[in-house]
Image (tube, rainbow, N blue to C red):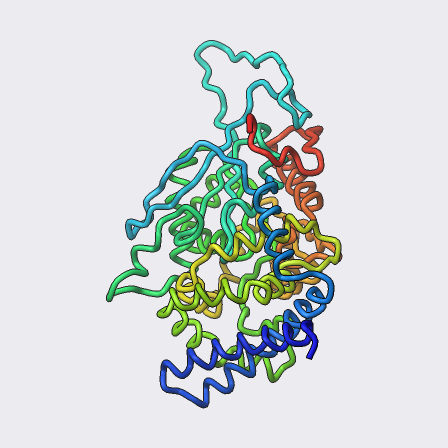
Length: 423
C-alpha cells in the first residue's frame, strides 16, 4: 500500500476510532457504529486531501512549513488598549480598543501629519462612532485581522473575545456541578456588558460573523431599546437567524442525518475526556487541517499563511468549549429580533460557497431587512473575511461612510498594515 493511500485510510480511521471510543464510553455500541460512519463521511473528503498532499510532501516538511508560517506570519499581531468587562455571571470578557488617530487626515487610511481639528470653547466634541466586532464559533477577535488593519486609526473600534474563547475567561456558568449550557441569549448579554464597559456612550455600529452575528441578534432581542437609541449601523457576515438544524454541511442526506443524531452526545463525551482528545487532535493534525480548510475556505489559491492562521485560531479552542457551545446553535432562532434593525442601515454579506452558514441564510436575513445591502462573495467559504478580505473591508467601509462614521472619501486600502506598529 502506498504512503498516500495509507495516510488517507489512516486519517478516516482515526476519526471513526475517536467516535467509537466516545460512544463506547457511554456504553452505547450501536451509536458508536452510527457515529463512526457519520463522522467518517465528513472525514473522507479531508482524508483524500491529506493523501494527495502526501504524494509530494512528507510529514517532516509539513511540520517545518507550519513552524515557518507560525513564526513569520503577521496575522493576529495587532493589539489595542486592553480592557475587561464582567458578564452577569462573573465571566471576565476581554476586549481591546483601537482609538481614532487625531493626526490622520480625512480621506486617508494613513497616519500622515495633519492639523488637529479645533472646537469652540465650551462646546463638547461629539462622541465618535464605535464599531464593535463580534467573532464566530471557535475563533477569536483576531479573525477580524484584515478589517482591523484597514480601519486602524480611522474609526474607533472594539474587538472582544466571546466567553471561553481567546483571552476571555472560561464561562463561570459553564463550570462546576451546577453548570448550565451556553445559550445565544447569554452571548447577547455578554455583548451588552462589553458595550457598557468599552463604549458606554455614543453611536454604535455592530458587526458580527457567524456566532457573532447571532450574538448581535440576541442583543437586539433582549435590549431593543439599546439598538433603537444607539445603533446606527449593523453588519451581518456569514451568519444565520435560525434553522441551523437543517444545514447539511455539504454531506449526503444519510450522513448528515446520522451526524445530527449522534454528534451532540459524542461531543459531550469527548468534552469530558478533554486531555485525551487534545492529544488525539495533535496526533491527527493533518486530518483536522484538511477539515478546517474544507469548512473555512472555498477558493484554491488562499494564502497558505492565512489558512494556517485559521487553523491556529480554531485549534486553540478546547474540545470541551467546542462541545458546550454546539447545542446552542440548534436552539438558535432570532428571526423576529431582526425587526429591531428595520430602520438601521445594514450590510448582509456571505460567501456563496459557505458550508457552515449557507448564503441562503443571509438571503433570508436580507429578505427581512429589505433596505439592507446584500453581498454574496463568489468563490468564498465561511471565513470570507479572511479569504476575501478586500471585499469585506470595502463593503464595511461603505457602510461606515453611509452612517457618517468615516468621511465618504475615506480610502481604507485593500488590507491595511498587517503588523503591529513598531514591531
